[in-house]
Structure formats: structure tokens, C-alpha cells
Amino acid sequence: MTDHDIDYRLSDDDENVHVGVWDNALDPALSVESGAVVEFDCRGAPNGTFDEDSTAADLEDMSFEGHPLTGPVFVDGAEPGDVLEIELLGFEHEGFGVTYFYPREEEKGLVPEEFDEPGVHIWDLDGDIGHFVDGIEVPLDPFPGIAGVAPAEAGEHSTTPPRRVGGNLDIKHLTAGSTLYLPVEVPGALFSIGDCHAAQGDGEVCITGIEAPMSVTARLSVRPEMEIEHPQFETAGPFSLSGVDEPAYGTTGVAPEMREAAKTAIRQMIDHLHAERGLSRTDAYLLCSVAVDLKINQAVNEPNWTVSAYLPERLFE
Image (cartoon, rainbow, N blue to C red):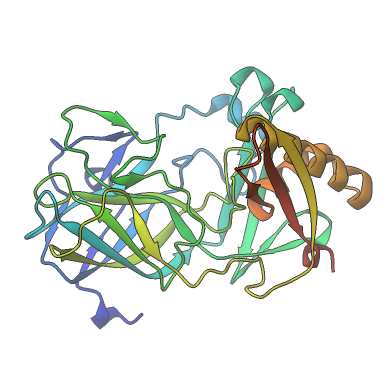
């Protein structure tokens, strides 16, 4: 996208960033007309904790107060009951990213009980490739982990859980060319965006994708004729790591609860990556979070769910 296509730019300076909360009382950082194209500078979720020389020890010094989000943006004409259309036009990373998980005692992530100590990988992001250990290269398809509008309920609301009005959806298919639709609950919508990921597996199982500061260009349009109750979107994917059908290795969990079935599938995938691919268990868990997809295979054969983890074989070519 060229400069003349962008109507407004919103930097990640402190006055344009709110951390950890949605709140419809926040003053807009910017007001735009419907159809405007805005370039957002977005900090990474760790908010500057990590750099190229960081290690797992730096997690001890991390004080996560919540996701730093750029915004809110007031969109003229948006009223409760309308829909805000967000066309995601482009992403630009800064060559750096991080994936990490917390130690067991924090009880965060899908299988925290498997790891007494934290894990961190600092990513060199080179164009559309992220460099992992042992020469493994992960294709990059950036997307915003968080894109949302302000809720109608007054007060501060955490950015951690996703909501009816969007937020921490972590839908990895909201890549460039995709369109997200969000129900509007307050005048002006008050749209914010951030928590960008250069890549992520469906599930984001260790609690992080490739967390990366980047700029996001989006067109914001009011759609008063639409009626939706929860987020909807249009996307062309990619739905596999390479964007085409490709060989995968799967591990499966079966359990009466979906989360327990997912935990079993991921535990088995960690075991597989360690035993068959030679990764440390720490690196296996990190790789699962950025490149392995969890899928619900069936939800009707009571009392058990079937959930499988899909590992693209091309990572090891």
C-alpha cells in the first residue's frame, strides 16, 4: 500500500495506546469518517519487555499489565446496532518477534503442568519467514490477535477474554485481504487493535504466538444495514501453513470435555516432536503454539469429544 492510500496514521505513542482494558469512557485517539484508511502502529503484547538478546530469565522481570492496544478510533456515523467493517489491508513487521510460556506455577497456557520452567524463543523475522531452532523455518502470515470495539457496559473490562464485540479473538485467518465485522454497542464504535502475531497455530497453546510489533493498515466502514450478534469475517486463509493442501502428522485426544481432549492431543504432539524430530520439550511446546493447528473433529458422539493436533510435515523438509 502506497502512502497516498492512507488517510490517517496513528502512532504507538503513549497518548494513543490503552493497556489492558476496554472502556467506553476512553477519549478517542483519532476521529475518522466511514471508509477511512488508517495505519496503526502496534506494540507487541509484551510491551517492550524483550529484545534480540532476551532469555527465559527475562520473564521474571515481566510485569504484564494487559495488552497494549492502539486506539480507540471514533468512526463518524457508527451507532449502537450498526456493524463496523474492518478491511485488513496490510501488515508490516519489524524483523523481531518472541514466543514464550510461563512456568507451571503461573497456571497459564494449555498444558502448564508439563513445564516447571518457562520457555522463550526470540525470532528473527526475515520477510515472510520466521527462523526457529535446527534450521526450521515457519512461514509468516501476520494478523491482529486483538481487534475490537468498546462494550456498552460501563467501566474497565479486561482485554484477555474475547467478547461479543471482538477483542482477543486470536483468529489466525484475519490476514491481509480479510474483512472482520463487529457489532457496534456505543456511538463511534471506538475501535482498537493490537497484539499482532506474525504466525500462530490454531489454539495458541503455550499462550503466545509469534508476538511482534508491527504496523497494520485497515479501512474502517460503518454498515448500518447489517445485523449481527457476534463477530463474523471473510477470509481466504491460508488454512494450512503453505496455503495449499499439504501432508500433516496428527495426534488425537478423546475426552468428555473439549479442553481435556485438546490437552491430550498437544501432550502427544510434544512427545512426538521430542522423540521423532529431536526437539527439546520446551522447543516442541513453543513450536506447537505457532505452527500446529488444533481442530475439533467431532462434537456429537456423546459423551466424548475428538480433538486432533495437526503438524505440517513441510517444517522438516
